[in-house]
Every structure is written in structure tokens, then in C-alpha cells.
Image (tube, rainbow, N blue to C red; front, side, top):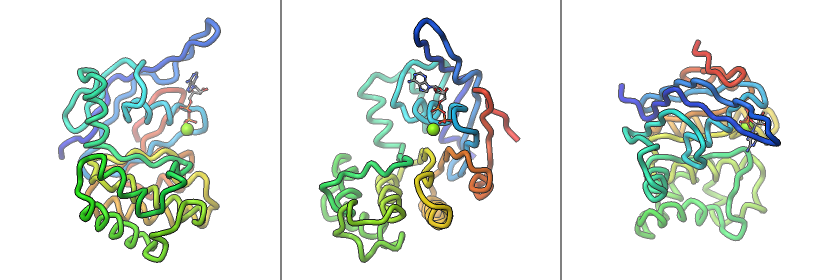
Length: 225
Ligand code: ADP
Ligand code: MG
């Protein structure tokens, strides 16, 4: 199996008021093509910091991050932006949808940014949203949707450009337990159906067990089990 993500000896520290905290130390992690990996750890264990590094959203880390075979450290800003657009999709705890755009438009936009033609972007958006049970919500704006529906739109947006790897940071963390279970199941079904891989941060052991493999973060180190 080819790796879509290979992280080697990743370290990240923050210095504040003269005090340095090592948030991540010696992290090795790989995610294979189409594999769904749970990144499990309590609050403050460094999950978001790790996803931000892998998402090429922040520099300041040491070590190697290879995404779809490309070494992030060797890329300039434009290269990182390109790799992020071409290979990655993101889902956050809070949906971060554009409030003035309806559900379809929120899913069309990332495709158009990547030069898709309008008609095919529209068709893909409607197909993804419909498969998430939102066929009757295509023209609704985020404020007109429930929390679970908003997260489903965010899932559709993350998958819009057929990313090799989806990075999801507590994707159902803002939902009640029952809705979280349903939305997570739909997320996993869609990611599997699309053949994408995913790295999903969660502090919830039960949700983590629904994924193909679980890796645990403890005090900045990864414990593979
Ligand atoms: P998690 O997502 O697992 O809850 P985080 O990655 O958000 O954990 O945070 C891990 C640790 O790193 C925490 O102690 C947090 O305070 C610290 N941290 C995260 N981001 C910063 C930052 N920008 N500056 C200083 N400390 C940070
Ligand atoms: Mg976090």
C-alpha cells in the first residue's frame, strides 16, 4: 500500500514568556491510500497541532512531512498552497462555511478555485450533498441548517476536489452524541466510497474505534497500538 502521508520525527514546540513547551516530539505516522486513521488523545495532547502541521497551515515544525510523495519542507509557499489544494481536504469542529453562500455554493467554490468548470462543479456538489441526505437543502444557507446538516456540508466541501487525504479535527465535536454518531458514520461511508484516506482527531475512544486504525497521542508522543 502506498502512503498518502508519511510523517517522520516531527517535533513542534511553542515558546511563550521565555518558557518553551514541547507539544510534539519524535512523531512518526503513516497513513496508507484509502486508510482511515483515528488520532486519539485527550484535550491538550497536541492533536490540532499535529493536524495543522500536516495540513501545511503552519510552519515552525521540525522533521519530515510527505504528502502524496511530496516533501513539504522542500516546498515554497506557492508549492504548499498547491499541494494543500490538490491533495488535502479539511473538516473542522466548527463548520467554517461561508455564511452568505448556500450549501451547493459552499461545495462548488473549492472546485472552481481549482479551475473546475461550473457545470461539473455544480453536479459534483449536488451529488455529494444528496448522498449525505441534503438533497432538499441545496439552496439553504448555513444559518438555515441544523448543526448536523452544517457539518455534512463541511464534509461535502472537504471531499469536493477528491483529496487523497482528508484531515478532520474533532469533526463531530460540536454535535450531540446521537447526531455525532450519524454524521460520523456518513462521513466514514463517503470517505470510503470516494477512496480517500483520512486522519481524524478525536478525544472520543468510542468514535475512534469506528475507524480502520487508532494511533494515540500522549504527552506529545505517538503510541501506535
Ligand atoms: P488538542 O488538539 O489535542 O486539544 P492542541 O494541539 O490544541 O491539543 O494543543 C496542545 C498543546 O499545545 C496545548 O498545551 C496548547 O496550549 C499548546 N499550544 C497549541 N497551540 C499553541 C500556540 N499557538 N502557542 C502556544 N501554545 C500552543
Ligand atoms: Mg484540538
